[in-house]
Image 1 (cartoon, rainbow, N blue to C red):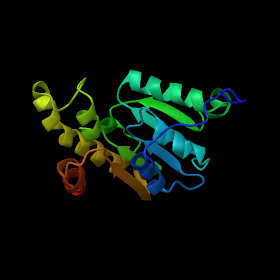
Image 2: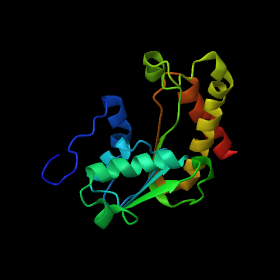
Image 3: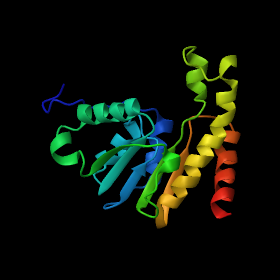
Image 4: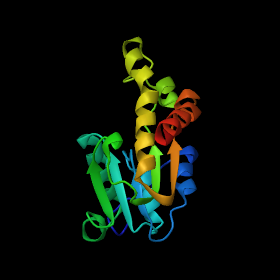
Length: 184
């Protein structure tokens, strides 16, 4: 550990760095990371020191606790300067978030089939025959999250939708489905 007692490097691959960078967070922005765990993308946005407030949301308590752990490991003044003030940790299904029209920027990095993980790991693999129904419901979940998050944006706000899947259904298909529902 360095002098400050926190870790100095959080490893992310290039594809994971792009969504928060493309979001282009500006000084004073109120930002939502809708599906934030484990927290690397949120940490990257915080390290710009631009967000006035960053809300890190995830659906499960264990996942929110993982975000908290990451922030404590990397922000030496987490409890004094960040927790509950500039950084809010929230546990909610992103389809049910209801702070409509309040965010300048939203990152929607949705749960997906995670193709690379599925090729490399047999444990918890979404492509197992026993998980077919769950896998087929993923685009509907993704579209629901995206559709709701569009409503959370302030007029003129920006949203970045990303997945770690190569599936056209989970990417362009979800965007088209969510936009169609949002505008109807």
